Image (tube, rainbow, N blue to C red; front, side):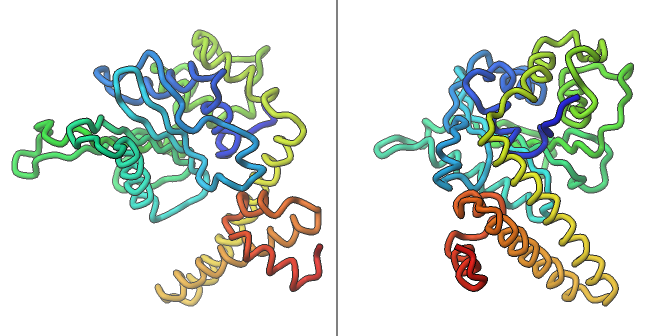
Length: 299
């Protein structure tokens, strides 16, 4: 059985954002985008690099890639609930658009930019569909007149996927099954509906052998921080709901997130984990963690 959860963003980034696994990223992208946006080859713009994690340079574990047809892609796995993720998704899409233009380039050189967001929670309201796609349309006609075709945003909501193996009918179904049931899969016991896809087979084989000892430690820290944060947030939400006040709920959520992050940081400091790694796992700044260390006399 797979011991690594591919939904943890650190694992997701290495599995789909490494040079040796570009074929897996291509398969995932092609399972989501339209026929006209299918890609054959991609260039990773921010490939997985453990040195970046050691240096604390990476805070968002997204994958940026450019296809041979000029299309740009931003792919991100989000495991923790974020009710402002729609704004964040637009912000990172916009950043990738602006990064295309170097000094002296013209706006006409901007290429279509597609944001793919895989969420391990329900987000898009009033739909049971796993896959939701957003474009800019003409509100008078309700049609996409392709006047603003540089924008496209996708949400894949894993919690809404409930197909049984015999109901799997598409590549997206297979990737969604892999992401949601990796803990039940291994090379010797792979359902035939998944075994027919060489990319899924490769992903199953790769997921448990892709980390060395240092990477596994980072993965475990990241995974635990997500679990602890969710627990603290849930407690804060429950307390806020008991008060029956919207302001109290929002304040409780914010306080819960902050308290969870600080508790996790203190635990990791006590284990001798590097401050840069703790900052990456908790979202706290290096300065905040250094201050915590000084206040608690942790070296």
